[in-house]
Length: 529
Image (cartoon, rainbow, N blue to C red):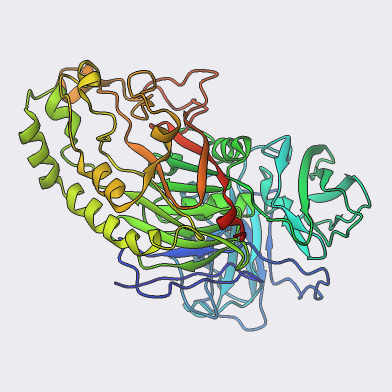
């Protein structure tokens, strides 16, 4: 399998897999940069964004004319060429002929958001000028996506930084100015006008440092955001409580307007720490991690984003992703798997629409490929489960299949008369030693069904518009030194989402409920005996 990699320009490090990864499509990773305070002198600009003209209009000036110099546009969160080597195809491009001139690129190929334009030499990927950031947003008033944000914890005596500029709706406009308006305690947090918050807390620093930050746009209007940084002492575990989320993005979220802002708001509002994502289409985990200042492991489908550093990409199986996350360096880590199993021959349709018996539906499940995928996944996880007393293991995903824990004689009437059903997609992970976090918190499937499919598809047009079967097909499994404090099937329902095909203005961007589980880290996972 061909592995593609990318590096955002200027200071972003790449984490390569420890071995070839068996997954569909290219694999990408994202690491938020460590921001240094000293800035090198700005090079003479050879490429500039013409803000007052069409969204993707640029002026260029070069020393050596060529009819094959060209300007390409890439995502702000990745895909720019690295050392003259192509990472991703440009989203749009055109030639920049002669020594100077103006190029108006086809902005219809770009959605609203932030991008980088690069001037490159002679049909190659060798940059002539530094990348130019620009934004295609229609809005002229810059604002943060949220009013309040909990930032990654800091450690007394250790350098800490966060880029607040990526949390704005017009990120990438160099005319935006950022200010730290307030910092509680001894004022250990400082800021740059480019949006970087940074500092080193001391023993006198507030253990809960409150911040107020401001962004001012081209029109001189300002917008404020509150932020909180928890400061840990030298011997205090970095993470005592971990919130883990699984969310199917539904084609990345693109079925709903303004999906990027809405997704960022949801993840921030939940104060999630690790999110297993499905249907990321090779870019959407990178996009979200870029905005949140998080780390990302991006495959074509199943991906993982984390508030804490992703330090290793592990061997994974087809339809999965696997990483090691350092919550506190070597002292506190977790293994996280993400999965999106095949969707063909959906089992509940056999019971509810086709009148099939259990044996026939089970054979159909085997034929779909999910049984083999679940078995392969469970076998791959087992070695990590053996060490989960000190390094807990998590498995998030959309399994496109219900759970055997939900199909019992007591729930027969809830599932079209199916009764007990040993669904392989849940059976194999449990047999391997994983626990279903939602069922740990809610043992009674009658009282708490926890349906995750579907708040958007209410009727099935392929079966005479009969009601879509409701099932729990999204999961957060775990093993090791963790305890479930709370687990919910989550959706923002104020206002209630409209069903497909009227979903474009929904605030909720998925066709699934998400699963959100809060774990307490037990002593062994905290580095204690």
